[in-house]
Amino acid sequence: MNSIKSNFYIFIMLLLIASCSDDSTETAYVNTPTPSPLQIPQLFQDLILDPVIPSNNPQTEEGISLGKKLFFDPILSADNTLACAGCHSVSNAFTDTTRFSVGVDGLFGRRNSMPLFNLAWNYDNKFFWDGRDSGLENQAFEPITNPIEMHTTWDAVTSKLQQHADYPELFDLAFGTKEIDSVLVSKAITQFERTLISANSKFDKHLLGTATLTPAEINGFNVFMDETKGDCFHCHGSDSNPLWTDNKFHNNGLDATFTDRGLGRVTGDPADNGKFRSPSLRNLAFTAPYMHDGRFETIEEVINHYSNGLKNSPTIDPLMKKVSQGGVRLSPQEKANLKAFLLALTDQDFINNPSFSNP
Amino acid sequence: MKQTSFLFVLSLLTIFGCSSDLDDDLTPANVTLSFSHYWEDTPVTNADFNDLKYTNANTDVLSIERLRYLISGIEFTNTDGETILLEGYNLVDVTNQTNLSFSPEEKIATGIYRNVSFLFGLRNEKNIPSAYPDLNAASWNVPMMLGGGYHYMQFDGKFINTSDEVQGFNYHAIRAVDTPGESPSFPQDTFFRVDLGEITIGADVEINVVMHIEEWFKNPYIWNLNEYNQMLMPNSAAQILIHGNGQSVFTLGNIN
Image 1 (cartoon, chains in turn yellow, green):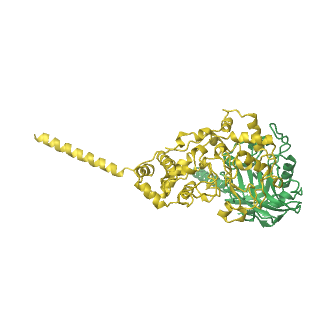
Image 2 (cartoon, chains in turn red, cyan):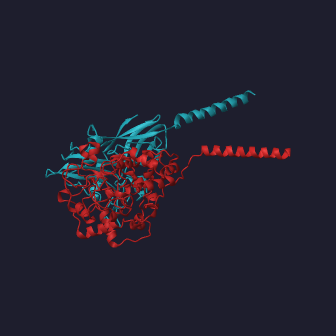
Image 3 (tube, one colour):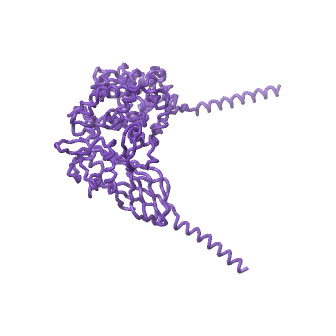
């Protein structure tokens, strides 16, 4: 009997010890997000430098998933009606179909919404048309408080997220804390945005040897690369730079005088007036209208601008050719071929990627 | 016994003597090339850009808006005529004030070098299309119809033309090419070697290289911007003139 009693005490003690041990583990437990490095396309690996990922915001499965949910959630706006995706639609390569986007108060901006893809390869790390924000995380801060966009406050947003049924747990999974703040919101959104990679156009496949260009597309590429014709390659990449942008700032001869000073407003240097960041030429089929103010509705209008519509100004880029004649004066056939080539940079898989659609 | 001790001491002296020689003659030093830019006697930085304040030898008034160039193949020739080549290249970007100094990974033994040189541009066998990701990312490429590879220099600006209008120029240096297209041919090499002369390296050293920008327009060809201003890449005659004028552009500055 004594032996049974004694065994019973030992058993109880073991249970207590095991129980204490479990409690201790739970107290010390911290979520460890699962690393999810960017899947770098073969062409990018072969041709250009690695993407820019801040060391304090590594890509994780939980962070990307949370960022995607936030990107599509109108909870980030003052009246819960406008999400990031409201002005950055996946079917339009994450830009808007209208010249200017409308905010929660019915006000319109004065710049065309920029498409979102291959953002991690912006080596200079300057975002927006005028480069006013350095770093994608900083860029993500602005629309939420911008009075003509989401027009709210970070206190209001984080309060709503904190009281939400799901978000505290999702932030815990992504960042190891249920305390939501603006920095973590920004980090999550940018983790998702960095996954928006476009590298599967017909021209990409041509470079990889799995697609054949038409004669018009080849001739159009030659117009693009010919310094005496289109001379597009100095600012818009090439078969050696699959970003199809230099991400630098240029005055491309849109105006003789400026109502929008662009980079000049940011730097305060008059020599920067009228300069805007070169957009990528990928996915033009989805990203109309074009230019920083969306003034051109078609690719033909864009080509005509460079061909015979250039306007001189003190800050026009010296790379703009034959300005006194309005431009490089392409023939109708050259224009048609150039358009055919540009459309070969269309990446249908990008806009149909289920990883990028509304969760 | 005495003989053994003597030999032992002699051996020690020999060993330490060898060690001392190695320290004296072969201590490797870090070498840095820094790049400064002048218009005649006046320093030029990007703060001087976008201003029609320079006048070239042809009396064209001009501004500088963008200036970047590639140097490679740094060589040290010692007094025995042996050459040490430091591979690698550096894209000097005056516009953004980046890469204005370049420190190759390899070190150089201290001593007297009767010549230090570098290449403006790339040797043809190194000028391989799409080969260098950093240069591709910098949109530094030359179209395949012009032979591919990379620019040697992009020097963009504006000048006042004979019609008294402000006009752009793109003084771009590449490998000169004839018959642009699928089978381009190359009339002559247009990369060139810049000899800096004798340099003594006693320890880690910074060698300053000065680009005299006005020389691009001056010597031996008096460059007329009204004649050669844009679309110079497919113009082999212009490229050969650029090559000729480049010979007097670089000089040795201070050694620190």
